[in-house]
Length: 398
Image 1 (cartoon, rainbow, N blue to C red):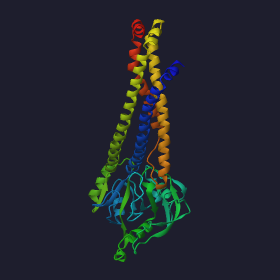
Image 2: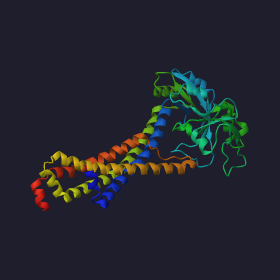
Image 3: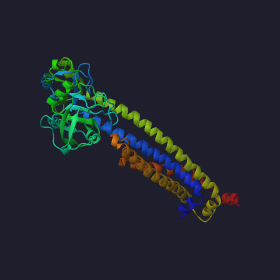
């Protein structure tokens, strides 16, 4: 009770001090929630792309580079020692010529889909609604794709999405949504998954009208996803595929994983640095307030020590007072940060872009930081108070 009474003596000063902590923790929560969201996406990407090998035409990219391969290449890759299975892919733009709605850099896309791939992947995709694709004219949507276009199992959707300035030769087809994937925090979330025959049809439709009828896309793919046998080093297997199969490029999983991790480390460093700077400012305000409190309460400290208060009693009182300031400011800052990030996520949900993720790890870090900040900031003033000579304290206050 005495600690609370002490805090009410200088209401304005303590309110300003608490506000400094609030601002610091608010910065920690908002910046930390952004980092948590980004890292959740990166972790999903690391797990998903680290479990397989992306194979494209030589000169293409791991995520589709516009080049094509003969469908027969899939069988050649499956003959490589160490390969468990290879699944052909044809990836086309979901919204040709348009700026895609993205989730931290993941664009909307349409690709060939074989449910059997789930048997080999260490990261399983599951259905939140409906069932897998079993025939032509059916599509399974990623969670973000379904949310963006407000689709659920049983609905219809025309793919690719017709742009507002579509050319006369633009073609799309109506598909029945038979399923929606559970959110994975990575690539599948923004995908639309159809069978190989339908994806070859869309590949043909994406060609200029003048050459569509000259190319048999039923014999082509744009890449494949390859899974290794248990215990096989996927990086070594990627090199083996590249060296033994002509005109293909197998990207090492470690190359993709390292690119994810590098981006995550930089983003986390920036957000953490900004949050810590705000917290340091809040800590300095606590130190200033507690030093002034010691100066104003010299006589009180002298009387307490004169009647038998030990050094540890004085030390504990001032540290607890600083901890209480930190706890109050931290709680308010955490609640404000949680509320603001929730409101922003709700406001951007319609555009399929959630920026923040307030995890329990972040909540615990924010609480520990605010309490620890108060304790650390209160140590210097508390030591100064506890070491006062009672006689000198009483004389200086007289």
